[in-house]
Length: 218
Ligand SMILES: [Fe+2]
Image 1 (cartoon, rainbow, N blue to C red):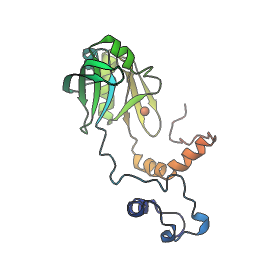
Image 2 (cartoon, rainbow, N blue to C red):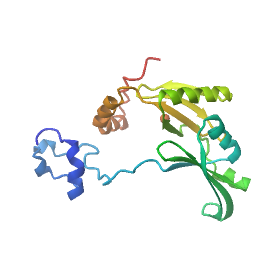
Image 3 (cartoon, rainbow, N blue to C red):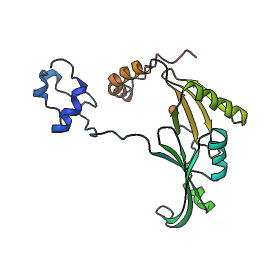
Image 4 (cartoon, rainbow, N blue to C red):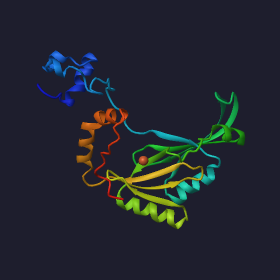
C-alpha cells in the first residue's frame, strides 16, 4: 500500500498493535507523521445506540403532556425512588421517567420531590445551544409540525443542508429537534468522514472558512 493510508485498515491494525505500523504500510518517510485522528485508538465495537438522554424537569406531568400528548412520544417507564444525592449531600425523593423512540433508546427525565433540589440541579439556560435531536422521515416531520401548531407551541425550521430540522422547547426549556436527512446523505457522510479531522484542525487553528456548501442560501 502506498500513498494515502486506507482508513479501512486502521481499526484492524490498531486492534493488533494499538499503533500504526508505518513499515507495514509501506509509506515513505514524509508520510510518517500521522494525520489527526489516524492513530486514535477506537473501541473494538462502537456503542450500539443511544440508551437514554436525561434531563431534570420541574413537573413530570407538564413534561409528559408536552412529549406524549403534543409530540406523541410514549411514556414507557416511571421509576419512583429515594436515594442519597452526591451533590446535595442528602437523601432525596425522585421520579424518573422514560419516553421511548423508535430504535429502543429513550428520553429520560428526573423530577425531585423537593423544589430546592430542582433549583440546584436543573440545567442552567438549557436552550442556549444544548439540545437533543431525533432522526425522522418526512411524514413524521410534518406530523410533528402539525402537532406543535395545534398545541400552540412555538417552533422553527432550519435547513442546514446536510439535514433539515424543526425545533421546539419543552416546558423546562429543553430544545428538542426532529431532523430529516437529505436523499444524498450517504454521499455527504462519506465526504465528511474523509475530511472531518482535517477540517477540525483547520478551524481550531483559526481558519474559519465555511465548508457547508449544502446549506441553502439565506
Ligand atoms: Fe442539532
